[in-house]
Length: 163
Image (tube, rainbow, N blue to C red; front, side, top):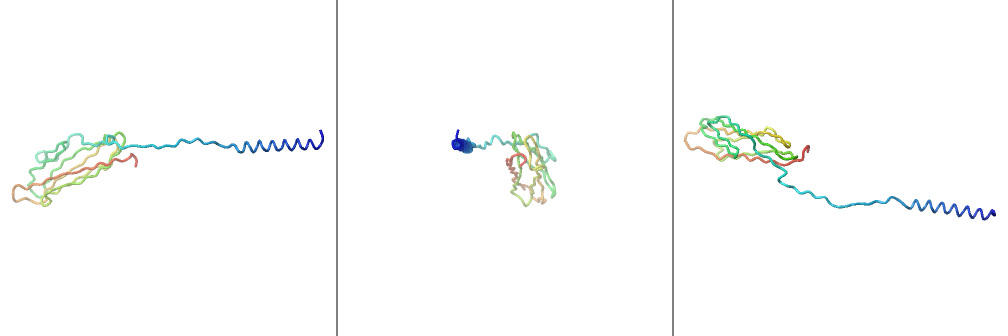
């Protein structure tokens, strides 16, 4: 083989190697993609908070408390007299926590003061807390028939655990 034909064969081989290298370099990673959407729907059945047990009262002669729930107070006669009922609240949700808050209503603020205290404002699933409702006579009545319509509204808001 002549020197020139060896050069040509060498050049052809070099070009072939370069073309193969370029060809391999041109083949790159292939990405396969799956795109879509995920949707979740809130279901009220997943969040349940309820009263449980029997309410305890400060004086059964003055307070009738039931899980209906109801609280009827009677026989307060002197300024400073109080009646208290404590209710247990249970979070029976499978995994959601409950953030509790409460407000009171009272139609006769001249004579009565209604307060509430939630022992633990956030309860995890399966946990309980208590709310204590106190009715205080803040003015001694001088006539019969002093009445008030009282109430406590408890809001339980769902929260993801450890939020």
